[in-house]
Length: 178
Image 1 (tube, rainbow, N blue to C red):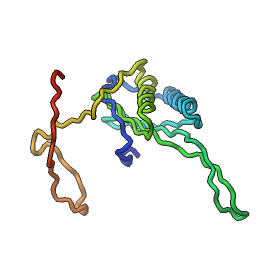
Image 2 (image 1 turned 30 degrees about the vertical axis):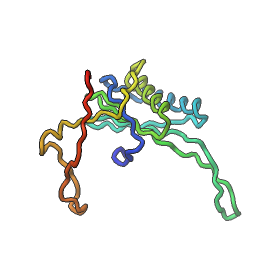
Image 3 (image 1 turned 180 degrees about the vertical axis):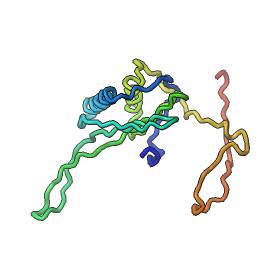
Image 4 (image 1 turned 180 degrees about the horizontal axis):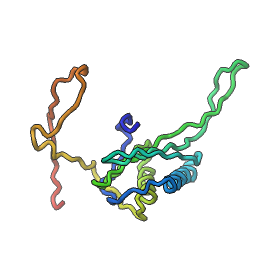
């Protein structure tokens, strides 16, 4: 589920082309095959990958289930100690916002791998041969809502015990010439 993913493995590309994503079954199958081939070639793991779409009004969520490296753990069976093979799945999630031209990738991996995953998405789903690298820095944040006292609405359940929310400190670093 897209809402259940943690925050530590998200990587943002704030400037991707604002084009209609190609999510027909044939294209998704080709994309899954390309991802499986990439990981089989680069990391020597299995080459299977299954893709699922969750198309929300404001964002496209693309879930990819990659075949991770297999292993066998010993476990007790009625006949004694035996090894049982296990082929785990590694999740990879893309979130694309056509209106804003943003691509977020959820994957626990090296920065070079993250960039390759973004480029594969641009090539297969967005139909772009080349993707410009993301700008360097700490990321882009939309803070327009904080201009007005009632601009940001926080939603929490009554049993959480939270009665008010406030921003204690907000720091701005201007970029000259930008």
